[in-house]
Amino acid sequence: MKALVLGGTAEARQLVDALGEKAMLSLAGVTRKPLSIPHRTGGFGGAEGLAAFLRAERFQCVIDATHPFAAQMSQNAFEAARLQAMPLLRLERPAWPYEPEWLEAKSLSGAAKAIPAGARVFLSVGRQSLGAFGGRGDVWSLTRSIEPPLQAPFGEVISQRPPFSLQNELDLMVTHNITHLVSKNAGGEATRAKLDAANQLGVKVIMVKRPRLPEVLTVETAAEAVKWVKNLGE
Ligand code: NAP
Image 1 (cartoon, rainbow, N blue to C red):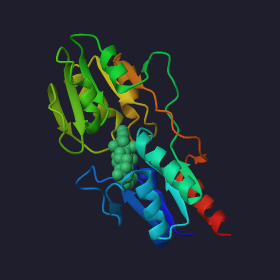
Image 2: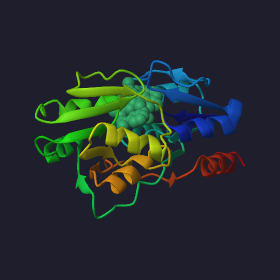
Image 3: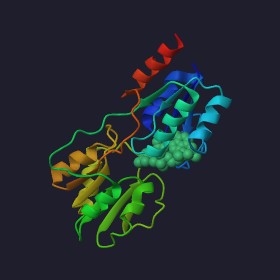
Image 4: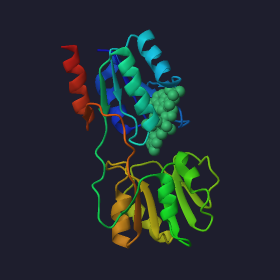
């Protein structure tokens, strides 16, 4: 089974590692220095472009292992697989379970509106999503990203790559007197410690809910996705 794995997540890398030569990892190319693993880079030109790529490269199945907030790519994968009548699996880590102390926002702009004036906010949303907070010059922000943010920040920027320990997150929030944390509900362990740190310190969490994605067969781990690919080949 020749599989195209749409990546941008640790689970996608684990899956490609496990499938070996039969799999190709595709990255959007938003990170200039992705981890060293064989891959192709760049958009396909929408759903039809992806369908044409799948056809030309003779793939037999697609695994959408993009980040839970990469809604456009997931929609494209759904449409391309339908156009090609090709099996599609979604590999998606579970969301963090809802906690009553959280303020939930339906979108990034909803989260931006929910921050009270004068807050010292840790914007843990990824450098591509900072635009939604551009109008909030009345709050101080801490931004963390692997590479410099695309948007001019209104506070401090630090560069760190996950995983982050609880001690790291506690130190960060204490040092910067953080009062609010804005996070996407990405799920997973690598970035979970910020929530535990916020709980311990009484930092208010504004959690952005996941976008709705097309309904497709979904598994939570790379091991389950490997099994799915192997079953297709039998
Ligand atoms: P998006 O809005 O869903 O996609 C925008 C466009 O980027 C797509 O239409 C596609 O271009 C291209 N693209 C996205 N993922 C691709 C992939 N794996 N391979 C080839 N092209 C891809 O995506 P996004 O939210 O900007 O995320 C971009 C990448 O960063 C994704 O790979 C995602 O997994 C990763 N990521 C996203 C987040 C997040 O919070 N959104 C967080 C961590 C990692 P064409 O239409 O031209 O094909």
